[in-house]
Image (cartoon, rainbow, N blue to C red; front, side, top):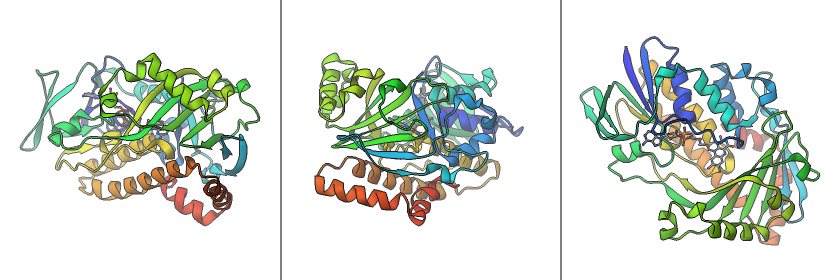
Length: 383
Ligand SMILES: Cc1cc2nc3c(=O)[nH]c(=O)nc-3n(C[C@H](O)[C@H](O)[C@H](O)COP(=O)(O)OP(=O)(O)OC[C@H]3O[C@@H](n4cnc5c(N)ncnc54)[C@H](O)[C@@H]3O)c2cc1C
């Protein structure tokens, strides 16, 4: 029986562990640095059809429908006037048992975790050394805890220590000149918004997205992305985002961009810098990177978690079928999504009135153009 070690119990690590646990030829263990799994209670996540199809293989379709929300459309608004521009029928890509879904992150994590034997998860394991020894891999956690495995899967997120260790610290994520603002907002504080849809508001260097996370009329998810420069010193200051004055500065910046009805009624607000990947690491035989550790995108295409799941499924197929083409397809897909994410963020943040006018006309046309949608979204959503 081959031993698989997974570093990091996020969406990507938990998903691939769920696939391996069904295969009697492998014994899988997840090593997580924290003492529990962080689930970001309250916040939402969008999953497109490509990942729902893969999640259904491990029973996601049995999750109670009241804990999920299936949007029909994405409504595009101009932020300043709160005026609707057009909509995109996202449910066109749905099939009977595979629908674009939004839910609470905590529900997804709980679903992935609860299906695993509790002994598969080792908490308080912070990776500190990775050494190759012929066909085996030696891992050291917390400086002195040694583990030997046949396959190593590194899924410890955007700031991956596993990736730093195998690349001699050469590849690091970069700040995306933007910060994310997360929160929740009650339905009754939102005017004239279609609650069957995802609502996307575009403004000057700022966009935000609001959507329900279930069918229980609980607070909606709010996620905003603000273009923002940080100095090198600020980036190194880990407590900056907890600093009251800094946070007030962000809020003041937002006041000029969005309606106070939204800002004043946001609860559970968290804000953090967005880091993205630059370049790939291909560690070679029996060591693999998945999820954000492999490549983290700007969040404007809402594909990070879906790609973490897709990437996990592809790696599982490669390992179990003894194939060695994991990186070929993955890099092509990552490049495609990265380009779309960057283009989305650029288009969502335009400010020149003439260009905004032209963007809005283009959006009205493109969101109804089947060929464009098949190419821009279909190639990502249909795997
Ligand atoms: C603002 C924002 C909004 C987003 N919205 C969406 C969305 O709507 N839809 C979507 O698909 N994606 C979205 N994403 C992206 C998505 O959240 C991520 O791509 C996804 O969570 C990555 O999962 P992961 O398992 O690779 O990494 P993570 O979730 O970061 O998990 C990594 C795990 O590794 C552990 N770990 C870290 N270091 C070590 C170590 N040294 N040793 C052991 N364990 C370690 C961590 O504690 C953690 O448990 C969004 C991202 C952002 C920033």
